[in-house]
Image (cartoon, rainbow, N blue to C red; front, top):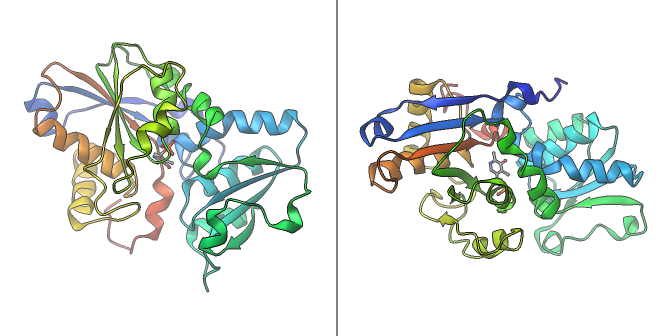
Length: 296
Ligand SMILES: *Cc1c(COP(=O)(O)O)cnc(C)c1O
């Protein structure tokens, strides 16, 4: 497997029409370049968990996720690199054929345990494991350690003095890390990829060093809900790739880039704003799309 390479991260200027017209300087931080398939932000979110698991001399790391989870995929890879055994507790009954994500996680050495949705909701390890000596990571890597890892993301950005930093939001862990590590003059704008997940702001606040620091979570760009898509979104992603050469994923970064272009058109950002988009990776999820859906 190819190694993680943080030196591959670049900060690129995006010169696509709405940004030009609205006098916005927009950059994108390419965490997707950390690895061809491991989601950039998941790597950051796992960093301190791995350190902790190793320092506690744990042999096994357990976490939770769905069949197309970037977190499961990245955890499997991260454990392999760090020589930890990985166990993934997977939402839903085992399907006849495994998703590409789960097949790859398994090939990376992760042991998969399937739980029906009701059981999964309790986020419990199976009873026969409950006395085991393992290190547990929350679903999606939510929590303080994940946020601390995400707080190191901006160290890899070659530009500074942003008026806005924008990212896709799942659990809110990355958003919290960005808020904790950015200048007070920078506004963090999170695009929720879930439908009406109004608990998000509170989830982010729980992880803030300064809970008074303001941020925005925008709920208008979910395209039907988590991992849902429309032809408009897919067309946008193809067009964005044609203009910029940058691939996005349909669960997170495609929605982020669509949202920021749309918000720019609607004058959400004052002229002269300097905006950073976080390309958080996640490209492995596109493997669930039919061949030919995307041009990249
Ligand atoms: C998981 C993920 C996110 C969301 O991160 P959270 O910390 O859960 O909010 C964003 N982008 C990609 C590509 C992801 O895989």
